[in-house]
View 1 (tube, rainbow, N blue to C red):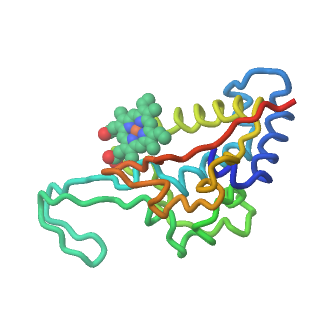
View 2 (tube, rainbow, N blue to C red):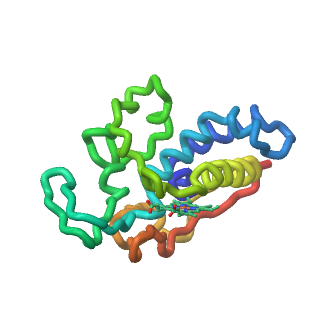
Length: 189
Ligand code: HEM
């Protein structure tokens, strides 16, 4: 929501899509598959702000990871934030660009299978990934249909934000938790 308050043009594109696809109807799973820009925006949110920043793993046997020899019973972390902002796979990684998930987009580069891992990867990947993506899209569709999301006018800190500066957001243990991040919802006419 904060990214959408920062970039009203993206919010407007979402609103236009929601208005066209939903009309006066409630969001359903069929409607979800018709909302391609919304699906892109959810993917981009998970890329730019992975809720689980560090994914802990434990080696069961002696192994190698890249050029590193790792002993058995060692805690290692998949750094979702890092790979999702790696310039080898993501053009302008610090920018919020839903269009990068269009297959014909200039931002859609040839990606490594593990360059987007908000739900981890492999056999223990999150079982709730699809559910979460659909739920997020449906809730956002309902909110954006009824409200414009704006930056709070009475809070100057929110007008010149740097989400990753540590002033507004903080990485807490393994999950990304916004602290003091505010938006305002203005009813649409
Ligand atoms: C945006 C929301 C969510 C995110 C970012 C997320 C992320 C993750 C991550 C990173 C893991 C660790 C996988 C690993 O160790 O390799 C995980 C595991 C898991 N998640 Fe989620 N999750 C989300 C929502 C959900 C929901 C809604 C459910 C249930 C309906 C769920 C159920 C699980 C379960 C059961 C596991 C353990 C899988 C296993 O160990 O085999 N998650 N999730």
